[in-house]
Image (tube, rainbow, N blue to C red; front, side, top):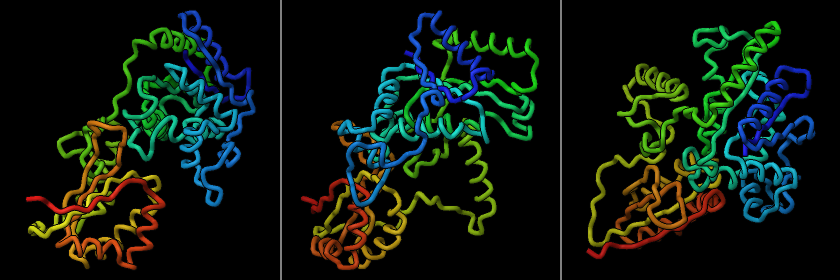
Length: 376
């Protein structure tokens, strides 16, 4: 089934003509087509507590956490559940909208926020995003119209490359959820063309739809292209508009750095210190963690690292991307810390200064901590 999520309220618009072309062409090709016409549905764009029939936490509202809970308990509001059912049944998703402020209209963004839910379309705390996302195996495509002519969306044009304008949607929404993203169909300058030109655009679109199954997806860097700091490996050349822009910024940063080195903010824990002197008394603490809320991590590391050092503890191994070979748990981080002795390790864990940071960790993550000594 092909699902078209459509966001335009004017039935005489060119956008609506594109929708009619989609339904007619795809149906003629033998596809089952369903349309979610968001304006006609009066779809609620706001993401609120009303989206959940029961709450995970009555005292502090966290939308993504409530989504995860609602997916496990089948307690989404009926309108969300109905749309999510369509998404799960489709093999191709088409998002069709006019380009407003280099993005989608608010009603479409609301559909994305509410329907492509944590735990249902992606797993933010379980590592199920990008090619591991829950929508893997499905295709998606953006169909959009602009008021500006195509020349303005040239890479050297005033609006910049269309590929860059759509990057947050292509990479940050569709690919993040696991979709194979097809190249977009963009109808430029629809308000300034004559009728014959517009007919030609519709014909081009129909031709594109007839070959939908043969269209190669866009390239996105796979997980294997990234190092443990979640940056592209030095040996991997940036091949997307998003990573190319970031690479250019990093090159400038490296050039301007006084010390000739710029550290990534992701590398919050530095395990490049002098090697830890291992003895028969050395005790190890292994943390297997799935982060559910990242807001605590920066302050946690800044305060806990020196506190750990006070008890003689140091990072021993810090994982990069975790690949699960067996089992269902997908941790976001596995780390091992070494202490001079089991007594020192337990003194760190029982230190009153650590208590508030332990509470922050427990609030923002799930997982297990193990303490052990080597047998030889």
